[in-house]
Image (cartoon, rainbow over the protein chains, first blue to last red):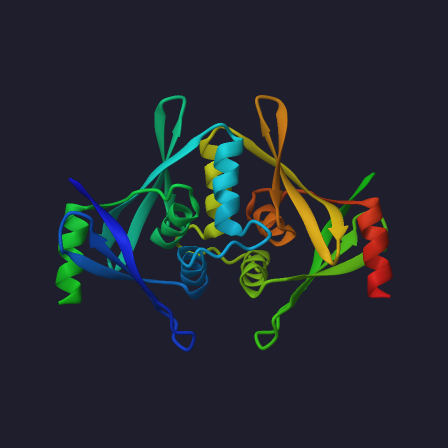
Length: 136
Length: 136
C-alpha cells in the first residue's frame, strides 16, 4: 500500500554533501528524511518559495516535455529503499495508460513541485517503515 | 541557416558563478563560448568523461521520459541570442512529426550528451555571428 506524503521541510547546507528533504504523511504523523544532492535541493527550494526564473529550469523542462508529447504527469511514487538508496518512479499518463519511469526521488520530487498543480507524492508503506527505523 | 557545431571544451571554476562551454563548427573553425550554470556544466562534464552513475541523473531522466513516451530525441538547436541570453530548443520526433521544446542551451546540451548516440547540436548562423562579435 502506498501512502500519500507531502514535502514539509528542506534543509540545505552548502558546506556539506547531503541536503535533506522531509516527507510527512498527509493523513498521519509519520515523517522521514531523505538525503539528496545540493542541486536538486536548491531547485526544490526555489520552487517551494514560489520563485519563477525567467527561463525554464531543468525540471520545468521535464514538465514541458511531457506536456508537449501529449502526456500528463500523474504522481510520484517512492517504492523502494535498498542499501540506503531510495528508488522512485515518475508516473505519466498517456492515452489513459500509466507509464512508470525510473527516477531518483530528488528528480521526482523536483518535478512534482514544478508541476501545476504539484503532483501527489506517494511512498510505499514498507519504505516508510524502514525509513522510520533508520531515523530512530 | 543552422550550422552543426560540437562541444569542444568545458571550463569549470567552482569559485565563480559562470562556467563555460565552447562550441566549434563541425565543418569550419568558428568557435564561441556560452556561460552556463555549475550544475549543468558538471553534468555535461561527467558525461563527456564517460562516467556512468548508478542511478539516472536528471538529463538521463529526460532521455528516458522521451523514450518511454514513444518519441525520439532528434537534435538541439540554439536559435537566438537576445540581450546576452541564448535560447535553444530540444527537437523531439514523434510519429514522424518534429516537436520543438523551449530549453536553456545548458539543458539542451546536457540532454544531447546523455543521449546515445549524442544528439547533433545546431546553431543558427546569426547567433554564431553575434557570439563571435561578443567574444572578440
